[in-house]
Image (tube, rainbow, N blue to C red):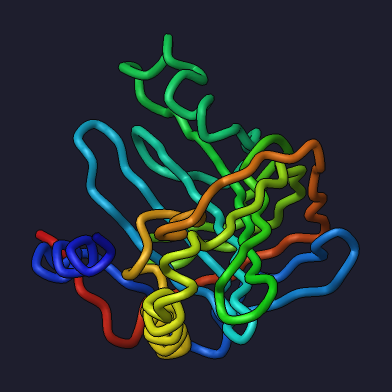
Length: 221
């Protein structure tokens, strides 16, 4: 499924972020400092626009995603973070009037080695402040509280080694700067079992700075 998704993205000429040393996402995850190179993905949907920025590291895989779904354009300002379930309904009354922005922050970390399990934080609440945004760049800060969920590889994937091979392939793509093209979202863990917990994860001192004005980009028409 991921390969089909990736092929679809490439054939329709969607965007991937130009990778430079200045493109980063950083934060404190439950008080622990974290920083990674940023990637960017922009998808067209009928009636709305979708911009995703993610800091992605490998070995172990750790990702922090910042997603904006909006009806007009992004402008500097502070936006409330919503949950995945809320994003389609928040400000629904103003949807047709434009100017609506849904903001989400998500986190994923590989545990137990080689992708056999993940501890994720699903978008719940907080704020994102865009301090600067242009047609080719975006900067800002964020503070978020996330809902903790866990994912465990299904037994067949683990026993056969198929999950391990696929995980190593994905790591290579992520290290090369194309990780967002292999995933449909921050919690896309194939052949895993999702388990909810009562825990919450706190992300503080978050910052993002992404510029795609140079480098290899693919732009749709």
